[in-house]
Length: 389
Length: 131
Image 1 (tube, rainbow over the protein chains, first blue to last red):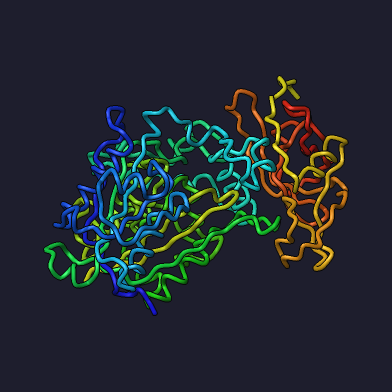
Image 2: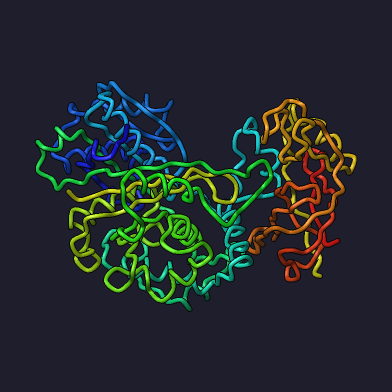
């Protein structure tokens, strides 16, 4: 049993707003849903499967399904943080392959920017019943210092440098200059990244992603539904998922769950890293990208610093064009969850609908990679491999 | 070393499974949990061993000695602090803070020893300082 070729991404929509103080979170979800359905050429009443994660207001999928007045036969509110939406694509394909639904809608939305959330720098108390909280929260873990510890250890173990990490931001900024909706459109240099203030050593302000409102949605459909639509066919070839934690105290901060989710996706798709023409790589921080690139097998473990340097991730010149929308580092990180936009830009590339300046020529095979939670404690990793049919 | 204002530490919220850990910390002792079935120590402490899933886990007083695995300094926090993972001599690594030291001298691999710092509620947290 495989999901290879059993489902297509027919609709994709990224909300154009990056700040939405006049809109509700539910409204943003619904606007994204509508955008993705219009993109696919489908209507709300065609939807029979709905997928959302912790950013959706209400109990699991119930409130948003009710808000949109959907008549459903399959729901899934798996939450693995920012990687949830890649997991949802895979689970939607599983549901479709088993005949549990034929048109699956996935939504994400949030307003951390309007709400003034200190996403990365403020410790979050969490639920005291969460078993790890009492052993971590009092010490002041934040999103940024957890990823900073990954970077610090990676530097110690493999000789990775801040200059190499900065190249990831530089590449993202080269792409973002062509995206009129991107939050940060100025091209930056390695020096500018290194000259930006340290937020949590060794990470600088420009090693971090943006905080943005907005959202996105996807419509995943069965092959027979895809045949009736006029959009380019983006087929799911393979998917992998893998949570990773602290292993009971055997902490290893130098790799991500992509070490496991990647090979699972490649095996199902029947392709290798060298075959990938475009990659969306989750970019909450520069170090996030570097670790996942290694773990996915685009280079040897520990060689990520050398791999990303000198513009190797820039579309048109580099070996692995990545995040051609500007990614979370420059474009958008709606609801503090970057997985949705990773899939959306991969779909644009495979349809040939990316900005001409960053469009990969004849892009037929793409990868979308997400992590969610924290690489410094526990996170979920999800990998999708998509093909233009 | 420049003297710094004390950082206010939020209190942990113990539960029946973890209360002995916090009771010991209040007395200045660091406990770890070791499994009598497989022999391995783990952290954070659990009733069921995360390696072999046996329920024959026991409290053990750790030496308080460890090695710095990784760290990050939040220099721009209201009171700057250093978060860390410390690998205890007994095996497991634990999240903690580095205290009573010059942040500029911190380096991965340095030897550390536990010290205990009071939280808002009176319970104490195991933190680490250069050995």
